[in-house]
Image (spheres, rainbow, N blue to C red):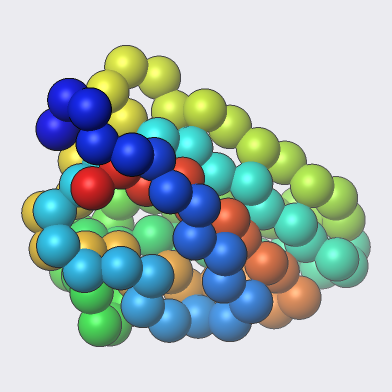
Length: 95
């Protein structure tokens, strides 16, 4: 994957983010209420099932981001994001 571009994918609701193989390099998440919940990222291009790549626990209102260390998180099939209520998510993916 050397030389491939990292692209930002922003989602406002649960759904498919991308298909195909790649690496998740980082994320930014915005939780607009103080309610708790989990945002789950799956190695699946079309459903909230299969291998769970990342779980982000929401415990309060705010914005949080993280660069994933090393080569990032490998996904083989695509990415599906299951968002907590009142959450938006930006994923930085290399494909």
